[in-house]
Image (cartoon, rainbow, N blue to C red; front, top):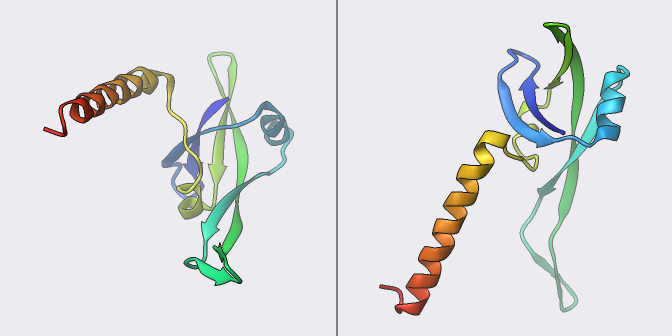
Length: 120
C-alpha cells in the first residue's frame, strides 16, 4: 500500500513508501512499525584479499493517526525519524508513474541512439 510518510513535528510530507499490509495491521492496532535503513559507515577495506565494506542498520519507527472524513477512515503515517526516513526506499504516487515511465523510455531511446551513432 502506497502511503505518504509525514513528520511528527509539523506533519510535513517526507516521502512516499510502500507499506506491506501486515505492517499496516500493526499500525492500525496502535503499534509502531519499524523499517530498517542501511547506512555505510566506512569506505572499503581489505580483509585478506577480500574487499569489505562496513555497514550498519538504523531504524525508522512509524506510527499512525486515524483520520475520518466523509464516512471513510484513512491512516496518516508519521515518524519522528525525519532525516533517516529520507533514506528509505521511496515509491511513486499513481499519478507520477506514467510520467516516470515516459522519462525512462525516452532516456533509453536516447542512449541507444547515442550508442548506435557513436555518441554524437
